[in-house]
Length: 197
Image 1: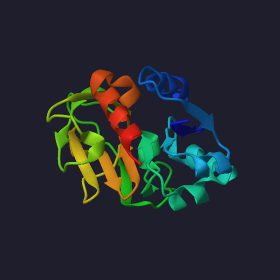
Image 2: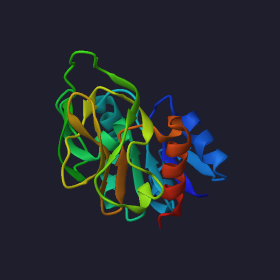
Image 3: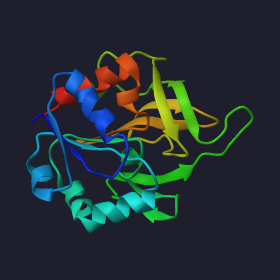
Image 4: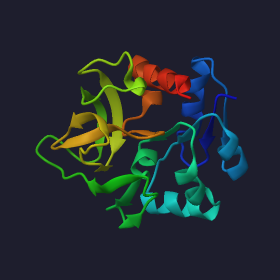
């Protein structure tokens, strides 16, 4: 098995598995702490609210396990947001792996919230996860909350403000966009993740 996908109750679990299958990778969806602990790589997806997702992770003891993991971990969309200290969504205490809080996006002229659709990446720092990704590549976003740019930001995007599109601290990475819905660019990000050890 190449990676486990944490069963966070989101509807995107199947599409994420299919994206890895297209890369020739085998994954397993699980909420079992022992399986997660022993996996070579871990993906934390997320769809829905931060409060509900954290309640689910705490309920199956995954919330306390995640910060202790040493293998590569990739948070996707809400899963990336959960890596931070807090979310303004329901004033939710999150995993605390990354500093700062996730903030609500403010709608502006021509930029409704949620931010939904294709947007360009601006590369901030080189990283193995972004190998082969070029400035202004397009990826697919669906979100109403975002992390500000900070020293953990690898790539950003513009949507009324500059937001973190890809982050990293140590063995924890996150993408605010959905790589499984981002065509060839997203496939490249997932392929890069599979090379991390």
